[in-house]
Each structure stands twice: as C-alpha cells, then as structure tokens.
Image (tube, rainbow, N blue to C red; front, side, top):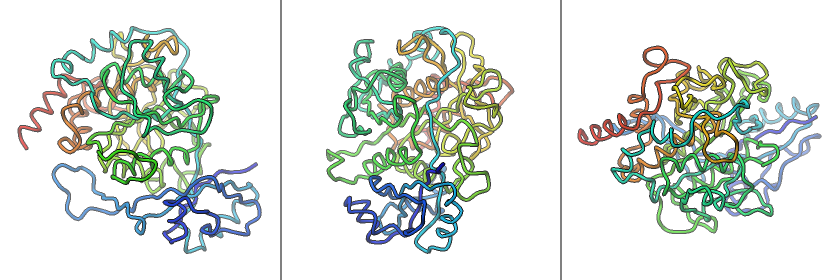
Amino acid sequence: MSTRVIIQMRYSQPVARAAFEAAPIAPAFPLTGISGLQLDEAYQPVPVPAKSRRSDIPRTFSSMFSFDTTPEASSYLMRAEVEDNALDNMMENARQNDNVVGVFADVKMQAIATCPAGPLGTDRDVERLLEIDELQNRGLDGTGVNVVIVDSGVNIPYLNQRGKNPDFNEQLSWGPSGNEPVGQMPVGHGTMCAYDVCIAAPNCVLIDHALLRPTPLDALLSDAVRSYDVLLRWLNGEKDSIFAGDDIPASLVVNNSWGMFHPSWDFPIGSPSNYSDNPDHPFNIIVESLEDAGADILFAAGNCGRECADPRCDGATSEGIYGANSSDAVLSVAGVVTTNKDRIGYSTQGPGRLVWMKPDIACYTHFAGSGVYPADGGTSAATPVAAGVIAAIRRAYPSNILPPAVLRNLIRRTAEDRGRQGFDFDYGFGILDVKNLLTAIDNYLSER
C-alpha cells in the first residue's frame, strides 16, 4: 500500500526553473535516497503564492490577506507517492530539511453525485423561481463572461443539441491527454453542470477544465492544484505558450461540483498534512489567491445530508463540508427541491471545517434539465445554477466594480430565509434570490 502526497518546497532557482520553464525537476527535489518514495517527474511543480495579512484593508475587500505571486516569494508543490512503511521516515526527513515547507495530503476527490430518484420539476421551473426575466430585462445573460467548469469535461455539441449555445474558450481549457479534446469530452457530469450554468447565463463563455476522470468520477487534489494554477496565471496576466491573447478578463466564475466524502480519505485532524481542516494546506491558499485575483468561486456543499447520504459518506453526516468547499473565499451551495423549496435530504449540513458558517446559500436541484441523467441532481446541480446567476450578473458588473467578496456578501444578505430565522446549517443564509440581489447591487453601487 502507498500514500500520495504533495510536497511543498521553498523557492530555489532549480525548482523555479522546473515550474516556469519545464526544466527537469529531479535536481530540485530535496528528498533523495529515501527507500519507498517515488517522485512524479511528469508533474511540473506548481507555485503557491505567499500569503500575508493586509496592513490596510480597503473598503471593497473583506479579505484580511494579500498574495504575492512572484517566483521568489512563492513556494512550490511537487507530487510523490510513498510506500506506507516508508511514510514515517519520509515525514521525519522532510521536517529536518530546510528546503521543505511541508508534506500534505493529496486527497482523492469525486463528483458530488446524488441519491437515485426521479426529477422534481424542470429547468423551466428553475427559471421561474430565479426570476430569470429580471436578469434578461437588464441584458444580464453572461455575454463575454468566462465560466470554468472544473469537472469531468464538457461536450459542447451535446449542449447545442439541447438548445444551449454558449461560446467556448478552447485556449484556456485544460485537461488530461487523451483521444477526446476539451469541449468534446464524453457526455456526463461536467456537461450537466455546463447546461445548468446556461439556465441563467445562456451567452456565457464556457471553459472546460476536465479534472475528473470519466470512470470513475474522481481525481487527486494535486490535479485540482494544476487546474487552478492555469487560471491563476492567466488572471494575473502572465503570458506564455499556454495563455493566448492580450486581454485579461474582468470576471471569471469557477464552478466546482466535487469534493471529499469522508475523513478517512485525509490525514488525521491536527496533522500539519491534513487538508479538510487546514487553512494552510496549499490548495486552500491557492483557492484564496484566485479569489483575491478577481474570480468568483463556487463549491458544492456535498451530498452527505443525514436523511439521504451518499454511500461514500460512510455514515459521516456531521461537519461534512471539507477543505476548500468550506473556504471563506468561496460560495458554498446547498440544495433545495424545486417544487417546494425544502432542503433536499442529501444536501450536506454545516458547520464547515475551515469556516464554521457553511453552507452560504441554497439553490435549486433535482429537476429535469440537461438530459444527461433523469434529474440534474445533487448539490452538483445546485452549484452551477447559482454560478450561472453570478455569470449573468457579471455581464454588467465585473469584478473590478463589484469584487467577489462584496458580491458574496450581497448574495448572503439578500437570500430568501428558510428554516430557522437567519443563518442555519441546512440552508445557510437562505435560497438565492435574484430580484433582491439586483436591488442590493444597485443600492451598493449608488452609495460608493
């Protein structure tokens, strides 16, 4: 048996060359000669921005931190596999090595699927409940707004056949090597998410990040690190062979309908290598830095609700919003039934692991829509429905006018309260309310 790990290293010229120039990484690797440790030399090191507390927090920011992405300030992630009988020895060597910041869990991630059942309502009901006409009357349809589907891959021809005709950005899309090109991946979970984004943002620009393998629907956290690195470099304006074009978008919406299902997938709570409860895990820092650069990031709350938990939850239905899904820098989305607005039984309840008050909001799920499955279900569907609303709004209110942190706060403040008064662990602050949100945006901007 073996354990997959992410090794975080301090800056050095060899490791920076490996990260930015695709130079050989073996000379930059400090843990050599350890029996049972295998470096993944095909995994190009990924820079992690340096995080520091802001000395002066502008009014438009809620974050107390800033991020330095320069090569010298960054640390760097490498991927390795360690035989279990060599893990303790490797950890001790890492602790004693000045070049190593830490060793972290490379957690398995899976799509947030759903309990089997028939659809409850249709995507037309979702349009009505969200009052999409309020968006359309203002010309808020997502035109020109980039929406990244970090999932199993998107099939654009299938979307066209189902009446959805978004633009597609192939140059910013990313995925594994294989026979299927990005944008034409096998029809599945990612295509469902893309369809649900288009309910509110039919003219958005889809970006396909084919993170999850189609069978089974899973990936390693280090794969997500690579995906977010592509987005962060582009949003920060770096230009190289990967990133084409001179225009940096004012808005980028990132949909994540995947996550961790059980604590046993991770290092124990309290371990410095832990992911789920550790704000210093490199992926959690990368997520924060992407939001700070101007991206709206949404994560599914998960499908470990007490009444109808996914079997992969293995009975763990308390505090099941793990890691980045519970970050302060993201909108964590629960699921409600389209026909009656009640929380759907599989929707994971808070508190969150990184931030206690999670989920943030709820949105509609388990409706007949994309046709990929009998029902677009799970918090997997609720999340892209909400992402579509944000993309529609970004058509007129880009992130340089309405920063992501401000928009998240407005979404929470204007949500339709359900359950107990105010915040609760079932619905968060309530169900996404488009009409109230638009009014709040108008008031916010008029007071600036």
